[in-house]
Structure formats: C-alpha cells, structure tokens
Image 1 (tube, rainbow, N blue to C red):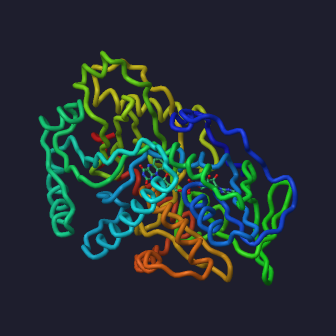
Image 2: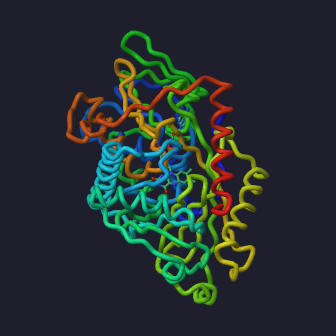
Image 3: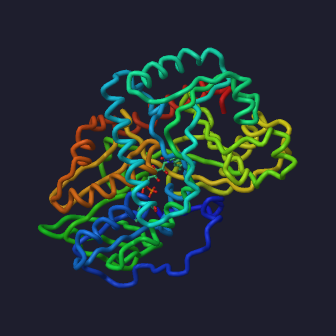
Length: 434
Ligand SMILES: Cc1cc2nc3c(=O)[nH]c(=O)nc-3n(C[C@H](O)[C@H](O)[C@H](O)COP(=O)(O)OP(=O)(O)OC[C@H]3O[C@@H](n4cnc5c(N)ncnc54)[C@H](O)[C@@H]3O)c2cc1C
C-alpha cells in the first residue's frame, strides 16, 4: 500500500514549500542507504555524511522528507514523561535510565540547533501534567515523589494558579516540571533537511516496497527502480512493521491533532493573555494541549489502531469534531469554529515502552519506537546509529544499550484485540480529559 498523507498540518503549512524535491528515477548502487527521512533518518544521514565524506550515501522517503510524524507532532521535547505507555514506570532505576536517554536527546537537539543556528521557536517553558479530576492527585503525588528522588525540579498547582497560567478553569490540579522544551516541529525537521551534507543524495516520494539480503548486498525494490546497498539503516518508525521489521515487538498507532487559527487580541485578552504553555494529560488517553507563542491552540486527543497508510478526509473530519469539543470544554468563551487544520500521523509503540536500537543482521540496522519522545530520542538515536553502524563507540551508545529491550507481542489477531481493548479501557478512564 502507498503511504498517503493529508496536506493539512499547520506546522508544515507554516513553512515555505521546498522546491528541490527529487524522486528516485534510476537504479542506484550505494555504500549506505537510509530509509525514512524524519528526525531519525535525517540525523543518521547528517552523521554518516560527516563520518564518510567519500562514500555514496542515499536517504530516501516514501513522502516528502520530514512530513511524516516528525513534521506533524505536538512539539514537546520532553525530559520526563508520566504516562509513558501502558505499563507503569514503577521501578525507579528503570525510570532513571529512561530520563537519562531523554536528557541525551535534549542535548542532541540543543547541539544541533546551536551548531546550525536553527530558529525553531525554542522555548524552555517546562510543561504541566494536568487533570480536571481531583482524584488524580494521588498519581501526581506519586510522580512528585519519583521526581524528588531523581532531583527534577517541579511545582504543584491548584485550579486558581492554573486559571492564571493557562487561561482555562478546566484543570483542577497539575504538576509542573521546569525541564522540557516546546518547539515548532516543522521548523526543526526542515532545518535538518537544510543541514544535510552535500554528499547525501535525498530522494523523496519513493517508497521502499520490498527488500532482501543476498550475501554482501541488500537489494531494495521501489516502484520503478532498485537500489543495491552495502549497509542499510531503517528509520521508518510507524512503518517498521509493514516492512517486516521486528514485527513481534512493535505496532503502529495513528494520532490526530488540530490547531486553531491565531486568537484575536480580544479573544486572547478574554482568556487572560497567558504565556506559551504545554499540558500533557495525567491519564494516557487524555488530551495533549498547547498554547503556542503566536496564540494558536493545538490539541491532540486521539491515539488509535488505524490503517497507518491513510486516513480519509471524512475520518479526519470526525476526529476534528472531537477536538473542537476538547477546545470548547477548556475555553468556552472562544468562538466555535476556530480550528484551522486537522491532521494525522503515525507512531510506533512497543509493549513496555522501550525503544528499538539494534543491529538485526550483518549491515542491517534499525532505530525507532520512541513512544512520544521522538523529537529528542529520534535525533539522538539517528546520530548514534550512524556511529554504531560505522563500528564506532560512544558513551551515548552505552546508555542507549543499557535500556530494557522491547518485550514480545502476540501475533494477530490477538495483538489487535488486546490493543483495541486496552485503548478502549484507557479512553473510558480518561473520558473527562479528552
Ligand atoms: C500527532 C503527533 C503528536 C506527537 N507529539 C510528540 C511530541 O510532542 N513530542 C515527541 O517527542 N514526539 C511526539 N510524537 C512522536 C514523534 O513525532 C515521533 O516519535 C518522531 O517523529 C519519530 O521520528 P522518526 O524519524 O523516527 O519517524 P517519522 O517522522 O515517522 O519518519 C519516518 C519516515 O519514514 C518514511 N517511510 C515509512 N515507510 C517507508 C518506506 N517503505 N519507504 C520509504 N520511506 C518510508 C515515512 O514517510 C516517514 O517520513 C508525536 C507524533 C504524532 C503523530
């Protein structure tokens, strides 16, 4: 099946359209082939280009580079996560290992934007884990306890504080963490495309259909052409499973989001003119909601098992209505029809929220499955996978490889039934927070 994207993501539409787009039009041979040009693939390509200035390196994507999940996420570069999956992070040492990786991810993005002087609306504003339900206090206090033990700075806020800070009386309680950054995901990924070294050949709108290894080469089949490569790095995240990769360890989930037009001065005044902020839900299926620096409201309140290759316009419309309700609940004084665009994106999940960073065969490598932390961790994993695949070694690779490995998932139809049931249950639990 062909990957078909909607063209309605505000973050992507904020950018100037690119003009230098090339599809694969010949058969090629190369030393390195990277499949997928999101944060992971672009970071891998940038690093490989630096490490191997004379090698032939191809980066290829089924869509326009950066226009998958990387250009259409909510823009939270996270230092901590509360609902990181459907298993809880009870064990402190595991949680610490996870936050160590988040920190390395933030450092990798920071280094990139400093080196290339990137403007991606970077704001070290921290983030809120908020809920309208007073009973969620217990979860927040447990989380606060974990953060104290690991020396993270945080504050607890009540309804009145939150009304002032967020401009909505919807939330009753929140835990604010000082760490974590809000950014414009489209600007960040575009900067990574612009920063590709000259020795990278980027091909777009060219989907890998099949691949196989034969002695020392890997043969890749596209619609009209073929590529034969010595080494390959798969950076296709939500589409790993459809390429037959780690099929019993990851599965795709489709998320949808909507963004309003900028609020007028009057509308903004009516909600108290808050500074830019980002709220994450306390329950996994609650809404992620952001006020951007240019007074737009972003909401993401769905995560579902759906055909990852396409969401039709009608299906998207239905989800957009859900998001309109989510905004109205929080900002009843704002007009009804302020959503400017809605879009979907695909991510990859593992059962225990662990990431994949692996050599699966001689000269075949995979990086992916970031479970909502892909901005930082994808950037980190891309760079570090390029080093690992070049037989290099870093302390970052040591930290990544210290993480728990993804656990086994049952085959279909059991997986589908299990995931759907779990999502349904989580949606019920988070009903008030959608
Ligand atoms: C709505 C939404 C909100 C999110 N919010 C956040 C957030 O706030 N913070 C955060 O850190 N993360 C968030 N995420 C997750 C984050 O976007 C991903 O983890 C991240 O983009 C992963 O980057 P990637 O490069 O590995 O994968 P992607 O960006 O998905 O890139 C993979 C690329 O591979 C290409 N590809 C797939 N199959 C093939 C094929 N057969 N042939 C060629 N190319 C192929 C795709 O076209 C795609 O461009 C969110 C995701 C979504 C959808």
